[in-house]
Image (tube, rainbow, N blue to C red; front, top):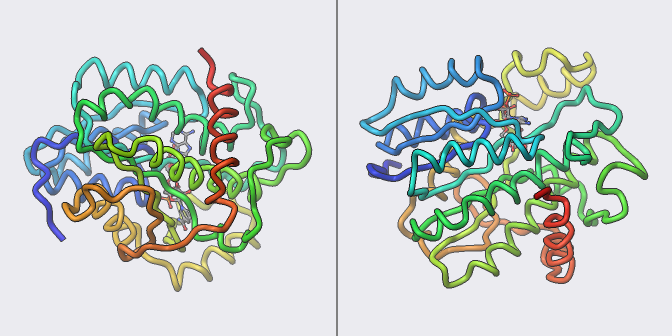
Length: 291
Ligand SMILES: NC(=O)c1ccc[n+]([C@@H]2O[C@H](COP(=O)([O-])OP(=O)(O)OC[C@H]3O[C@@H](n4cnc5c(N)ncnc54)[C@H](OP(=O)(O)O)[C@@H]3O)[C@@H](O)[C@H]2O)c1
C-alpha cells in the first residue's frame, strides 16, 4: 500500500504513541504534511523527530493539545488555522483509557474526563475545522472506536449519566464514549452528505500497547494485557487501515462506514443506527461545548 500524499495536509491526534504514531509515520512516508496533535511536549517532540526522519518532502509539525480541555482544543485549532488554509484529513485517534481512574474526574468545563476527551472534544474539534475541511473537499474525517464494543451489544447513550453522576467505571465510561463516537460518525456522515466531506469510523481491535504505557496497571490487568498481546496486531498493521481510509481513491465518496483491519466493513450494535438517539446525542453534545 503506497499513496502519493504530496500536498495533502493531515491532522492526527494522539500522534506520539501506538497507532497514531504509526499512522503519522506511514502518512509522512507517503509525502503528506502531517500535523501531530499531542498532549505532552516531551513525548510529542520525541515522536516528531521519528516521524520527520521518515518524511518524504512533507512538512511535519507538532501542535500541543489536551483533548480533555475545550480551551486547549480551541487553542490547538487556532494554531493550526493560523498556518494552514487546507485540511484534507482529520484523524481523531487520541483517547483516554487510563485504568487507574476509579472515580469520575471532572474537567475545567465541568464534564466527566473520559466523555470529554473521547467524545465532546472530538465533536468540538471537528466543528472548529469544518469550514476548512469544506474548502478542502474532497476531504475526510476519521473517528476511532473499539472492537470491545462487541461485548456491549445493548449499550446505548446514557443521557442521565453523562458526567458519571449515577455510576462510573473506567471501562464503562470508555466504551460509552466510543459508542458515542460511532453514533456521531453515522450522524455527521448523514449531515455532510453532498458536501464532499466523508466521515468514517475505525473499529480498532486488539492492538499491542508497549509496556511503557502499561506500567501503571495493577498486576492482574497487566497479565491480561500480556496474554492479549500474543494475539494482538501491531500498531503499524492497524495504522494501515487508518491510512487506507485517509487516502484510498476508491473511498472518495464512501461515508458513514465502520471499518476494522484489514480494510473490512463491520456492523456496529443496533442502537448505534438509531437516528433519533444520534440526533439527541448531537443536541446534547452541542450544549456541552462551551462558548
Ligand atoms: N490498543 C488497543 O488494543 C485498542 C483497542 C481498541 C481501541 N483502541 C483505540 O485506538 C486509539 C489509539 O490507541 P493506541 O492503542 O495507539 O494507544 P496509545 O498508544 O495509548 O495512544 C493513545 C494516544 O492518545 C493520547 N491521549 C490520551 N489522552 C489524551 C488527551 N487528553 N489529549 C491528547 N491526547 C491524549 C495519548 O497521549 P499521551 O502519550 O499523552 O498519553 C496517546 O498519544 C485510541 O482511540 C484507542 O481508544 C485501541
